[in-house]
Image (cartoon, rainbow, N blue to C red; front, side):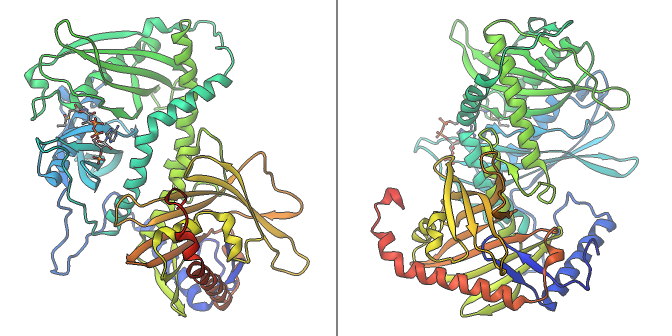
Length: 613
Ligand SMILES: CCCC(=O)SCCNC(=O)CCNC(=O)[C@H](O)C(C)(C)COP(=O)(O)OP(=O)(O)OC[C@H]1O[C@@H](n2cnc3c(N)ncnc32)[C@H](O)[C@@H]1OP(=O)(O)O
């Protein structure tokens, strides 16, 4: 039963609403879900496949935008080590994703960007590459396409994941102007989840360049002088410049330069550059976002430049840039990316790399920026790539991981909200309490309708300082840092629940999001973070929240559904006591005072100028 003692009674300490308890029906639910979870793992099911979804007509549902490509890796697709060249893989990924985008749009589409990609495995000649792409969400003229790549060994009948990527495609403008794409209607739970998180990924994508620039300028300023290493390789030695004439075979079906071909050329020069540092075969591990800044056409000369920006113990960062010109025309910036390489020994372990000696001025800048980007990448890996259950409760917050922490905060809440197997536990005065256990985490959802427009509910609930006005579990709430317009760090203190005991305090990151379109809810996500300026004190027990928050959706004019979510982690489950009545009455009481407060104050919120709502 994985740490669960059926004889124990349970008390769950949730962030906001004090101590809550469960009854035996909840306990039965927890056990059942746990057992189901274990059976899945032991059965060794293919985790890459979504379960079949049967339509009311009895037919098996298949996403209408889904496109699949399978390719046997031949020697002509491979490098001299017999591994599929990543450039070739990028071409196949781009084509598959473009066909999916065009299936949704019904018109020609171009690649605008491809988010960061991390390659888990190399693929050998003779193995099969299976690529699957589908449109997760359409915005105005752009859409996010999710791409999954797996490798299949036909002789051993085994499959494994190679990478996942998200690409943004844009429909070509017509003479009438920008095209408005039709919406994607998610059908399965997986599609619902991707649809919901796509909005958050888009937000991050569009601010990515600006945020990274700010981060680099603040963090490189803190770095001291470059370290001098004996036997370091001069960065100049790794510089590569190569030109390609864009010929008809390099064009896509719309007669502009095929995006996959540009990425493949970039990967080629980056590999040469990496090889010059280590004099060995480098393996590409990850690529930081490709952004296609402008088009290129047949007859263009594409100038590709690469250089090793910095080499660390086991990895190096190569900067690559693609520029185009026609005849005597000026250079146009087409694309830039950063690629991380490793050199593997015979046992597949990363080898120690030679260090780099940068050139003065620009070389130093690139060297320092590579250190800052490495930290950002590690933070990203730690926060985003970890499974939710592996992320420690409180992650240290700092300016360099702010973007990924707030992404993680919002997406974790959206993932919880998109779960389809919530079970109604109890209902009272139109407030419903649901429970769900996933991956050893017990989740709660409390839902009610209020006669207040969603925007006003959002305004009131997203300022945690105002919560004391309706929630007596919030004793004190102060803003510590206003990270940006939508992300705030608070310290919240709650009163003690037992006689003579201590109160609890929390350091919370609150991330608020307005809807991307009318089908989206307003979201207020909360999670614990740690801040060196706010350590735990003697006076309070430091409490932690893995994932909590509100989803606020206007169902009809002036009627809004408020859903409050919270998670209890395995760590607190053993302390949970067997009394759902306590849990329910606390949730009901708090929710009712919240609804009452909203309805009483809606006029004062409505009177606020639009900029403040
Ligand atoms: C067979 C594979 C397909 C191919 O080979 S395509 C060839 C390679 N790709 C290219 O040549 C594209 C070159 N880039 C361009 O033409 C332009 O930059 C591009 C993508 C049209 C965007 O131009 P803009 O002037 O920014 O146009 P816009 O402001 O109206 O925006 C249009 C929609 O694009 C989105 N967008 C712009 N930059 C982005 C980015 N970095 N990442 C993700 N999305 C991005 C933007 O949000 C807008 O979306 P929406 O219309 O609001 O839904």
